[in-house]
Image (tube, rainbow, N blue to C red; front, side, top):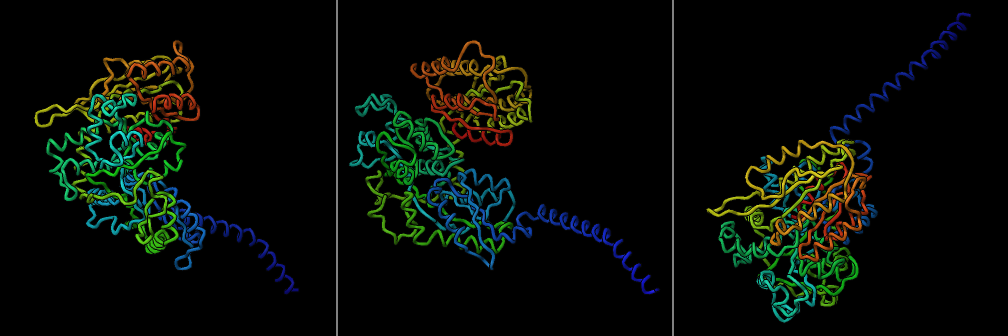
Length: 591
């Protein structure tokens, strides 16, 4: 009997302990989740789950390489490569070289960076060391993946008018064509109008930086050892300014220029500075059917190789396993099968044992595998900084109206606040009037219109003088959102202001940046049809105005904004409160 009592007592304790055990398990599980969350917050990418998934290599690469690189990333990720028993995965992101440099300085942490040219590497190292106080460079030992020379891409008929292929053309001929008031009439073709040149913004894009560096060398009459003092000579500054005077507008990527050339043909631009690879892709029809073939002009004064380096960054965020994995991917990209695929994408392999003859790189696609004859030396970081500063001083100025929607819907979800920040960032990119050596150097011209059910002038269209930026920032901070939207009316009003002979300046880029988050709800004077007719009138009068539009949020009239941009050879972008600041910076690259 006593034994039976002890059994019952034990059973009772056992039954009573089950809930207690369950509670303890719950507490233990909760503690584990909290600890795991803390680890993920403190050490992103180092959680047990990340370790189980393997080794992740984050790669920033210039968009020109996308057609070659993206299939190779997929192939490598599916090949089962592992380091120490852990599978390797490459996470690749296409991002323009200048934008990637800035992103790294602002805190993004890729394992590998592959800009379009080694020119960007000393710039990153210089700015990284200035910003962090580091004694060692962040990027060393760049290994070229593929190469492509910088060229001036011209329509074949127009190139022949300048003497191609028998004449060895260069920057001197481009300058002569741009400065001649007769335009193409000086070469027997008045129907072609003025000579128009395009290159990307050197702060954003590789071809833009290489263009400005090549102009600097040509201005100095050198092919190596370009120094900051070479750029300070008045004749050198005048040379670069003469080239820049022909620019139709700038831009953030060669991709945009390539698409415009394909869609608009010779009416858009006579010549655009691009990589040879992009000329091949254009002639292949990658961006649409061309009205005629493009040919690559290799400037006789010399040009650069875009060598697309592969740089494993030496930051504390890159561990030894990631370094090993990054090296494995580099060897894969440099293997002969991968290098042969580069030819199919219009690049020249970095593996010089692979022959270029009988490849895509030939006259049929407008290029010459035996060029360039003169290759320019990569300048020092100090000289590159001086080049950028010199370009900012002589770049083609802008005559610009910013048009800002302040209707009632802009009060939602912090929309207006984000736009105000974006406007001030855009303003930072513009140039004020300055005095140099006793001479007044013109700056940009800017005006700001705001609209809801009425149109108001926040800042009259006028030259930017020293101190104006602070006054404009203060005015932008006063904006408030209310009422309805007169989108058609404000677009026509802005166009009339810009196309007015008293305001229009054919020495400048004449443009409107229009941002709206909704449909037209209150216009009384203009419809879409009559607005587009006003655009045609301005162009027929010889005062075309480019309109760049921002469709802000899901309710914006994307179709209308796209048609306005396309009708004026501008661009439409889609914005949100999260990316609107970046979009204003991106659009500033066109000026």
